[in-house]
Length: 193
Image (cartoon, rainbow, N blue to C red):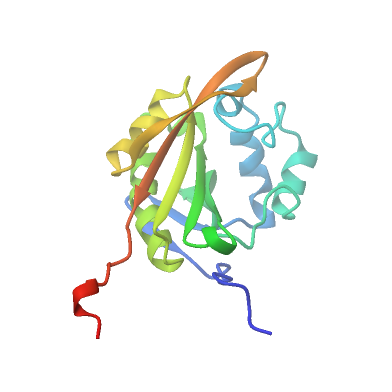
């Protein structure tokens, strides 16, 4: 039986960018993860699988792969030798195998330096090539314009909104939908023999 499509190995990936490295999460990232993740400003823009307070047990579960599939292209963002955020994508399956859903976060101490814009600039094209994607999508809470700007600076187009899609801390939010697409080359039907 053949392997499912896009089952790649990412444990040896190391992508070097301007002032950061993207690499797989390691168990020894726990202290760095706890230092950056246990911040209410971080969880404001993320799904509830990223809890607050962020406990040692939460970090251990994440690094064990119990929260998200770490065999997917899910990487730590390392700055000055410390994991201070993450970026990853969940590849689609079956008829959606040429698409993926991307998400990311960065420790608040590093905000405002353009790091996440550079991270997405490195990661998105690499991911689209590696997984032969036609579509890379990301959703952003309506209350997170900085994240929307990161995507727009990287050529993602806003396609619309999923209205009243998320409830965070008792407040209903829309999810803004962004995508970067690279359609396959279309074969000219008149050239077919």
